[in-house]
Amino acid sequence: MTDAVLGGTGTALINILLLAILFVVAIAIARLRSLFAIVILSGVYSLVSAAWYILVDAVDVGFTEAAVGAGMSTAVLLGAMLLTARTAKPEKPFSRLGPFIVCLAVGVMLIYATIDLPALGDPSSPANSGVGLTYLQVNWYDTGVPNVVTSVLASYRSFDTLGEVAVVFAAGLAVALLLGFGERSLAETLRRNPKPETRPPSAPRDRDAT
Amino acid sequence: MKGDHHMILRVIAKCLIPLILIYAFYVQFHGEVGAGGAFQAGVVVAVALILHSLVFGLTATMRAVPPWFTRGLAAVGVLVYAGVGVWAMLNGGAYLEFQALFREPPGGHAGQHAGIIIIELGVLFAVSGSMSTIFFALAGRVAEIRDEDW
Image (cartoon, rainbow over all chains, first blue to last red; front, side, top):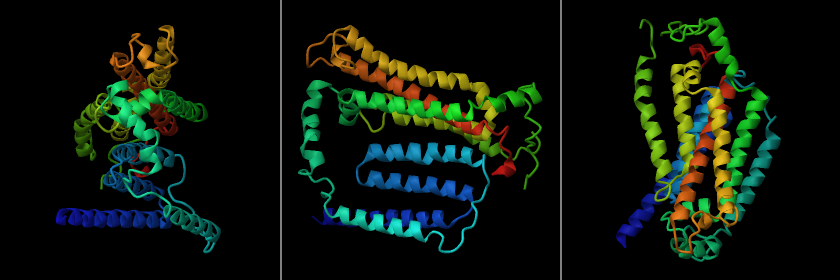
């Protein structure tokens, strides 16, 4: 009993701490003008929310958030940042009043909606009592795969996953068709500098060795 | 090498990239028993590639893993996934019905395991290939990322 209460208090404290970090990072992202800092801070935001997902037992979601949000999208945003200016333009005061009101209204609506949400791990919630329970019961006989997430994703809902893979492929194809395959830089470097070992003259290594 | 102030970065990246790739394959092949799966593994593979290009330069990465390879990999991944469905249909089942892969009765699991492993390989190829293609397309617009550009 004491252990459960202590564990609950500890989890609640960690929850509050992680959500406070998320809040501070979000405010910092909104106020900063340097795009580099914003990209890195959005990676921090993803990592902290991944830790929070793991705290609420959503391990798969947390892992995906860490890999995609913190790793992949940070790197892609860094690459995209190089194509544009390094800092965002400063804005006039009160120019963001409209978006602020919209955010406030959506936030109030979301908080109002959380009142109807079932408690965390509630066995009688719709997600746990309907088809989810059926999957847990028939999965071992049907597929023999220990991880129900995998068997639902790959076997029961294989069509969905095929669609997701097609979406990922289409996204890559669309970016490549819009921006080129990136071979321009390789061709340019090769033309300027046929030897593979040396670096192109545009990138001297010791220019800002501070 | 005179003036190479990124030496620590390079050495650490050389140590880390194989570990990242091993972890990606661990996630890939333990998707049946643990957290994660082929989507995450594909992204981790792409992240290893991106780390290589951030530290060693995009040209070095493009020599190691050419852009035609990554975009071909993405297409092959989708084809592998869709091909498993056709395989099931050739054996008399519905599209993507893994039970029909080896014409097993209900309760037989060999087709389920084989089907899941093959489509997860397809997902790994498609996701890592697409992500690398996106990164090459974005990063390949500038000839080389200079230090002062950060």
